[in-house]
Length: 251
Image 1 (cartoon, rainbow, N blue to C red):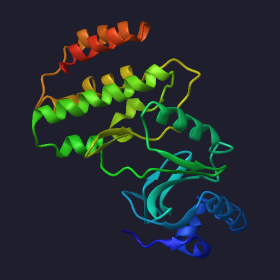
Image 2 (tube, helix red, strand yellow):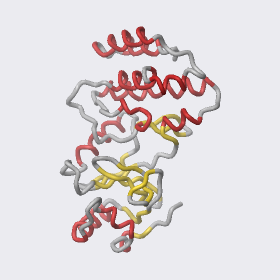
Image 3 (cartoon, rainbow, N blue to C red):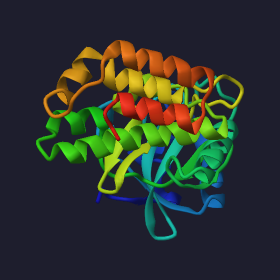
Image 4 (cartoon, helix red, strand yellow):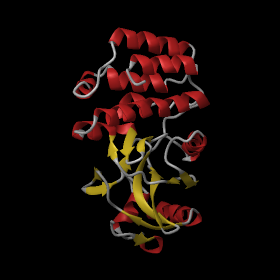
């Protein structure tokens, strides 16, 4: 585990500079520190697969960066709103995550404020990494791919479009318990849901990705897949979703 710095000691420490990234402001950092305490955050730490200014973090994006944190004695993921973000607060993303959690999708939300989201730290490989490293039983691979579509279906069912599942390699993490969807900063309940269609197209119609799957699985006929997805898109019923799974050779 990375070295955790108590919240009372982060100002002046390198991890504290990421409270206001990419433009550090000490007065803003101190204001944000009070939010952390209200959220029950006990300490912060660097570490992760992403690199910012030669420092490793759990994640980075247009809206925020993700740090390790301790809350209630448990290591969690803490999303920090970037100073230059076009989002005025993290409230909307948190509300999307609450809705996703109700459907059994996404990292568990523990708390949020204007500038932070404290959530479950999901451990595993990005889907793209997992597929590249896969050398196991084809049935395990089939189970994971089916679970991707079933998680996506849950979002369609509750009326939420994730918005980033065309980038399926980095928005699913494969854990020991199966794949998990992450990063709801672009999610919306105000546009047509395209989670299943985006996921299926990214998995089976992306040549690089499909070529990896084809080493182990029987791939769907592209035309049949497009037709089944078109039918599902027009009428997102359980029956039409089952037809997508059938075309993909997943049932």
